Length: 143
Image (tube, rainbow, N blue to C red):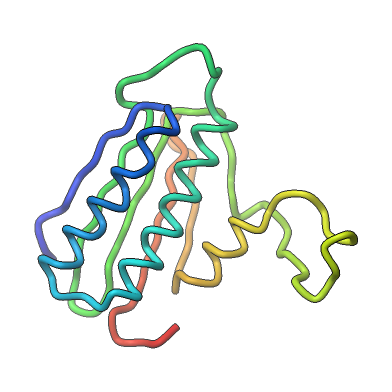
């Protein structure tokens, strides 16, 4: 297992670009394929945006609202994103029926659908007042 890359974000949307910067540095350092960086960035961006947009009162800034870590084991990137926001299990969002027309679909949920699609594993837990989402992306597949 590699040394973890860590990132701490305030609960402000202008912090989101820092995720892509961190993921890119991590993937370049470990010579990972660009698609892995793209998938990790997409998933982490979506989860952090949801936490910031829905998990916190908009008028109160927290310096350490969201914490992110990235590690690499033998065959996969492990990412953990945790926030101190309201309890929310993204996996409780029903799967999106992408076969329906736009007018027939419920609003929301497409971002969580994308997270499920681009990650090999997604797991949620709420512990000690923290939402924690564990992501795993294998480095040896073409998903």
